[in-house]
Length: 168
Image (cartoon, rainbow, N blue to C red; front, side, top):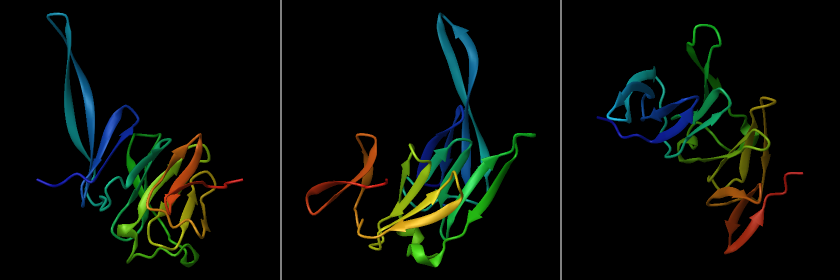
């Protein structure tokens, strides 16, 4: 048995990530008994070689799952032909301040409005990956303990004050 470190919805299924692999939990309608719908679940291996080490380190964006592994950010996507899955490693450029040695302690936030993944928590600001354009950029001075959505915009607490991230 392995601990589950990340869970998220993926299409009509639930994706669950342990430290070394990932699984899909699929619902199956078993019909009706005494007026009550019966549902069972099937567990299948999504990717036997990749998992996550960060609690909450899995986020679904469209038809892709982004997750933090031991050494990098990865994207797992489903092929439109045959439904097979592929994993792509997203390289970490030096300027973002996150390395293969520090990524396991990195936290994860998604700016749904802009299709961006925000990686933070290493004291060097925020590294942002645009899933729309496939590029990185970073903000310094955002040394936040947690980032969340407030009034539709990324926000964080620092020194007992609430800050809205200026993303314009």
